Length: 101
Image (cartoon, rainbow, N blue to C red; front, side, top):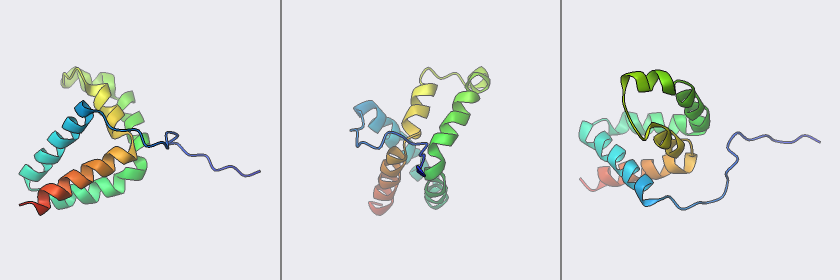
């Protein structure tokens, strides 16, 4: 009767929308242009299993963060980054930019 409970319940492969892909591409380009590719890859690989938990923390801190940083799409960005599949897409984009130097 032991059941494994997963926090990440959306296991289906949903295609990523064009706006979400553009958002991830912008992040990948910013990371590449900053020269912090290696630390970013390490951080993203470590944080990938905790993406859902981190997104819940950002939602909780949303009102405080929005007091200092005005962003109309704050919660949409959190929604994109809560899925480990999207983190993997971001990692692939960063690695592709790094390899195409």
